[in-house]
Length: 318
Image (cartoon, rainbow, N blue to C red; front, top):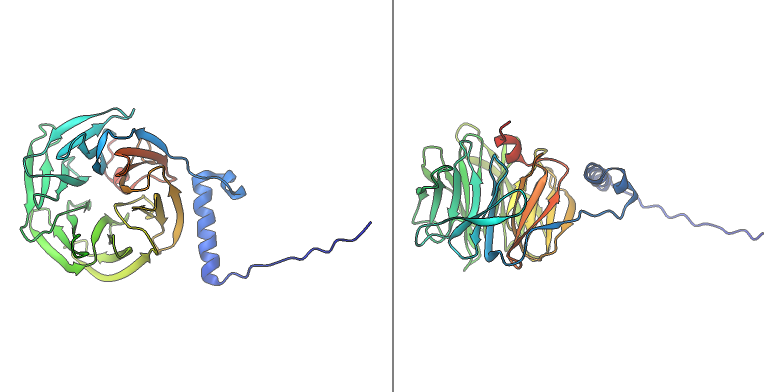
């Protein structure tokens, strides 16, 4: 019997490589169970709302305490649509003349807040009467794009100027006072508060950078800006944090959701059917169902994450 020699090739990991490798395995294991360890398993997205139900301006999205999903620009611009847990969408309301919604969030009192980019407002919508009011306004705003809300009701708003690829960052205190936190950033877009509320994340679409700031829990002010992660291509859009602190980022043009650890490690990318995800939200019975709005489809895709979303865990009512 002939003897076959076998050449073994070893990959030498640095300490950083090994740490990242272990984190990725742990994330896959929590997401897919034992099958993930064997490799070849991918998250399967499904259509929740089909093509063309919303316009190309579909954004938002947000889930209320009862599990209903909301997104802007249902059938026409300047509207908000609501989707029941079975994927049936209908018109909720039309915004006042001159207003067009973008990011949506729910506050601790169940009130809906909407970034109105054409009216330079943050709108407030009563959950029962659906009365729309201006909660915050500044003529100095370019076009409020996305918002994030802390437990105490403090709102953070991104404010891009697409014409020159710059942007600002605003804070709206619980009493409605509007404060400009930083000006002349890159094209500010996705924004989120960390699961422990110690940090705020802001991304820049054109520059493809995600920044993190330390957050003062007493004043809401931000400090110690530093880079969390930078991507080599495509764009960045809406972001959400899960209850473990991982950041889910819509990669506009790449057709994926990137999952990034609190340390800035890229843990995983989840492929979508559409190429232009604009934002996402956590919901479902256990808070692990992720809904993704797609500009190129006017649709909403969904997949299941290993952990519930930050807001779902924060606002849910038993």
